[in-house]
Length: 379
Ligand SMILES: CC(=O)SCCNC(=O)CCNC(=O)[C@H](O)C(C)(C)COP(=O)(O)OP(=O)(O)OC[C@H]1O[C@@H](n2cnc3c(N)ncnc32)[C@H](O)[C@@H]1OP(=O)(O)O
Ligand SMILES: O=C([O-])CC(=O)C(=O)O
Image (cartoon, rainbow, N blue to C red):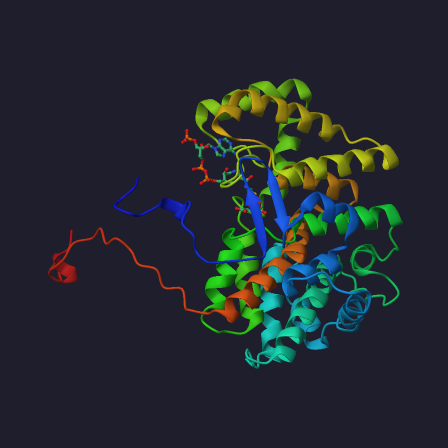
């Protein structure tokens, strides 16, 4: 329903000016700071890409080394945060644990020196460094273990996988994981980034900004879809069941997880890269039968819903990659958050550079001049 100028979901409404990333949803094109996602996935690393997104340029060798060094140095989390996390219920969802832990960082570092570049840098480094540690710590603690201390000799991705499993990862796995982080780092004004920007526009601290974005990413229509995809493949169970499953969804107008996108009307370029990464993992570490179901599902969804511009999105193949890496299903969305922190921070910084508080309007659809009815007279 369109009322006046109201666009449900703000579809097509520009919310900001931004030079961070660009999407052409008809051509299936994604660029970070003008560089194609394909080139970054092939040639960059997640930390370098984060620098590019946040500071707008590729770092020199010295700048990159300094940034990596700072992040390594800040990986540890305070004992009091660990103790707080130990009290979280082990059955709670890791995204809730992450949101609470990210917000808790503000208890220690909340000084809002937003005009001070050193404060901005420190907050960027702390958040990039500590979010993976908190995700891994919750995973260890809910299994009854102590969190694994970060290892300074390992790079960003290898260290995360190490903290998760207490085992140094195979270099190919660490490399593929790093590419996944790069692919998920940024995507214009998606729901969680918009949430970050709205929160940032009040000039609150960056920990509150990231906590707000984590809460938004968690939903199944956004980042939470990667977890739902694997559960759906499990429910489908076999390649033969795919066609009836899709036909039933189409008939009932049910959403098929991992498909559709507000901007892309063709296959998401990141889904293509992730599919290639999944195949590389299967070649090296053994096949996953869920992949056959996924490929068939993509074929049938394209046949039935392609005319509506519904194709595989970034969440469709990522779960298959993470599953092969042995990452638990309910950590797929926290892993997405680890990556998207860099995009959220880039938008936080950009927002502060030309800030005006977000305060849109509404079209009121209620009544006026009603009388207060005493409770005993209400039916
Ligand atoms: C990182 C990310 O956030 S990527 C997106 C992850 N989310 C998912 O995979 C969940 C499934 N997908 C969806 O729910 C949607 O496609 C969204 C939320 C991504 C985009 O939503 P919108 O742009 O608001 O599209 P909307 O929900 O209005 O759908 C438009 C039409 O396509 C249909 N449609 C959209 N997505 C799907 C889907 N996954 N399966 C079946 N039909 C779909 C809708 O039923 C609707 O059909 P209609 O016009 O006949 O009523
Ligand atoms: O852009 C969007 O609407 C969803 C998103 O975050 C992504 O695709 O990475």
